[in-house]
Length: 110
Length: 114
Image 1: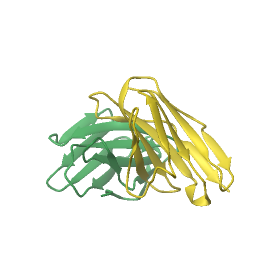
Image 2 (image 1 turned 180 degrees about the horizontal axis):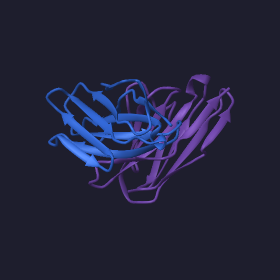
Image 3 (image 1 turned 90 degrees about the horizontal axis):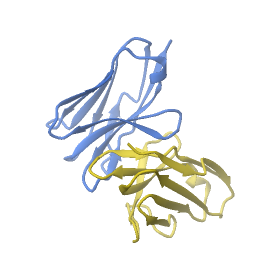
């Protein structure tokens, strides 16, 4: 499978700062989704952006998609301790099958 | 959205035995999937669970090792057969609602094989 790349692999910031995570992929996609995972538990769906969309917002989350560069970014504004988690991008490359990136481990320091 | 439950939530098993994981969805779904997450790694798709027919497996995964059933739209099982320590992972099921394009995940089953 064409697994995506995420960077950074780990990010540590102070509470209140903004956190930006990037995701790159290799093939054409139908959509790209971002998920959060707390301490090896199940994944929580954050946001879906379609291939014909360039930017999407949900609360403190902002996602961009650049299909020409095959990349996406997730911005979390005004971070909180509860945002500490691993964040994964996943691309739908057809047949509703998701290909996940390696993930970014985000730590918010109080 | 959909609420997905998995049983068991965790288990410790002996080498050579098998474990069946159950996944139940509270909504009518179109697609169900099974993923594996090895320690410290990302998720890898094992197979698509098809209702009333054989599952569709991804490269590197075979039916003899990971038999899957989906007797109806909202329920599926994954069996990890003849386990070895390398099978120690979190196994997650997911489901996609009709027209939603979003996959909802269960809480996962943490499997440790001794």
